[in-house]
Amino acid sequence: MRKSPATKGNRPDEPLGFVIASVGHAAAQAFEAALSEAGLHPRHFAVLRGLKGREAQSQQQLAESLGIPASRIVGLLDELVKRGFVARRESEADRRVKLVTLLEAGRTELGRLVVLAGRSEKQVTAGLTEADQTELRRLLGIVYDNVAVEVKQTRARVW
Image (cartoon, rainbow, N blue to C red; front, side, top):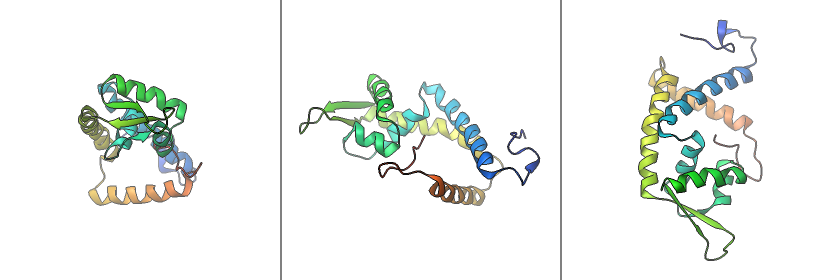
């Protein structure tokens, strides 16, 4: 098994934040590589996931809920609209507001992306039992809650 510089030798004196950041970066690269088959980025996945099961929401609401800068959400949505995964329309109440809705093709694509993401999930969790995975999720949830910065009542970005 390959070890990162952060985890080589299991050095207990290594700052835990550095170890978590290193592992997170490697896991993020694996996730990005898995989604690359679809020609999409993990932020596209986050947007589709953020729209699933919700009524139309404004671009601003979506950006805030995902912790993605409003300037960046526009480009992500442009790509998803072009592919027919989401629809964007003006709000009847305020034409300056753009409402975004997940289309059926987007739901289908999200399902495909979840399958692709499963490949990186297997890589990330290799050697871990179900109990280990549950405990890891619990511990990472605690760490996230400890370090997630709230800006304008919004949690740190999901990706």
